[in-house]
Image (cartoon, one colour):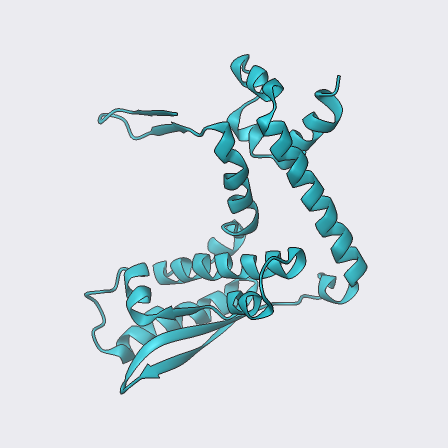
Length: 214
């Protein structure tokens, strides 16, 4: 509903309508988050581009593994994402570069994935898929590293995972109810609630449970 921009200023101010906030929260919460500490260790622009794309896919794998909503093969595809070489060139802005695939593979695949595996929480490998004589697509295989300090994969049993998923789902529902509430509009109009706070599901769920009933 609101955009502010002037050609002599670097900032663009955008206000999102409250009805779209649940979708933005879900997007931020489940799919596009990635560890800034991981990105800080990456030097190659191709490493950063691939890491963000791989993170988006793996986050969906983790999300749907717990909450359901996708067939088993769809969930597994998020952990083994497939992309055509043409799409990969567009994504990495190399349409006009590295015309020979061997050069492209070295600079855009091998070196960046070595860096990602070395410096981030992912171990990533890939396979090349041929169509005729040329390489048509790449399928990546993402595994999350297990550290000595993080035994969550071994210690969190199914019951705990299901309980955690139920709590998260309840919190999401309460937050969405709060966003639709007239009280949220009043708080926003009187500057007692900011759009940034609306993105926090804990805050919104807390308002819905503890504040709005009063």
